[in-house]
Length: 172
Image 1 (tube, rainbow, N blue to C red):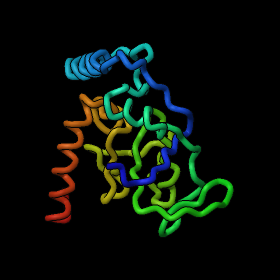
Image 2 (cartoon, rainbow, N blue to C red):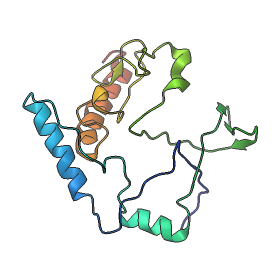
Image 3 (cartoon, rainbow, N blue to C red):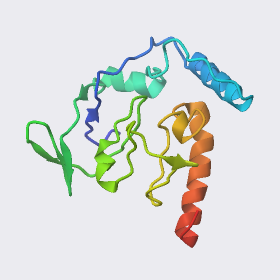
Image 4 (cartoon, one colour):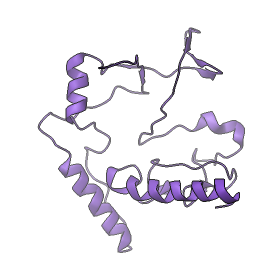
């Protein structure tokens, strides 16, 4: 049973791969990029496909239910929700902040962590300037192939261990 209303917020409309693409090609590309990095070679930039949405069964089901539509970004957070660009305020119970291949981290400006290129200096996924901030999935600068299914598993495992250690001891 589906119980939640959702708003899928994207900067640009998403690109969906054809139903018959099962993601193996994307996985093979990501695996090869990690292998090249581990061998000390500069990975080739793949031609197309990365960033496109694979039509796994749950995505096809959502499409068939008519819920795969997106809205443009809201203007800001408020304590119990968001304010849309037109000033409309909407209460929300949860926000799941997912990354893309061209992230915008300007919402973290007040923390003083942004570099000139819009990224955050990290060491092992942890902000150098704000020790209570970790980043995952933003691309190779937050971990090898971390914006891919192949790479995020390792990054997430290591980061969750580091966060647990930080919370237990006050340092990671």
